[in-house]
Length: 324
Image 1: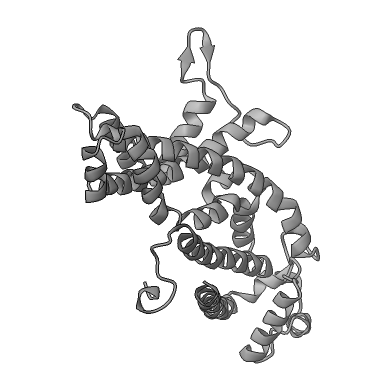
Image 2 (image 1 turned 60 degrees about the horizontal axis):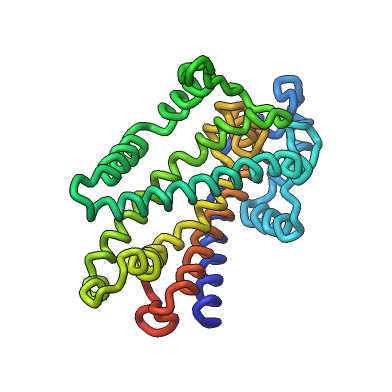
């Protein structure tokens, strides 16, 4: 196990180093206007002095070395336009809790609803009319086929304009997010969770159906083992093993917020921050946020590999089967 973990961690660090180096080099091609508050009013001499103070006139390998040195000390630089002169660490400390709060709620909802729907669909395949499976399939196909921006806007409109009426009461939730209003959390959380719900349901249903058709399940049924016990102890447990590989990455990406959803609901979180930084050409802030998302993506893949190895004793941690 230790050898397997070490190999995966080293591979993740190498991958992360390559990705960050490429990203850093590409971001250096961005216009230098992003490092100045009022670029059109700055003289050529002042531009060169500022660029030199930032180390942007140094050779690229030297800049890259300085960049990694800052990362190791936890320094992501200072904002040049979003909040001029303010440490990016300070900005993230204000923005990140909002995304974490929304992300945690949406992850809990999507995982619970997705697993419930997946189990319902899998069990419905063994019934005569397969109503649950057909309805679940329609939901998944719609979510997978329709662009996310479309159903996010539809959900926002339906939830905020009082389209749905129950008796004399109309469902009319706040259209924009406000931290002090608990009701304003509902639509952003649902928007963040709906895609992941369909994803979990689709794959759990597939894995459970595959497991239910295997010989050991047929043998258990022939021996008279109750169907509920087979589904709970064998089919569901084994179907979850390949699914857990994707859960850590889903958790991390959901916790950090969605670019589009946070912008749609004016959520002052990480997703909207990246969009804003790109729009105002705050190069340093864009670089810091891209680095964070790259690190989270690699961490999600690494944790998925490790979690899958921990929950599945059938995976060989050494030898030829390690290379999967």
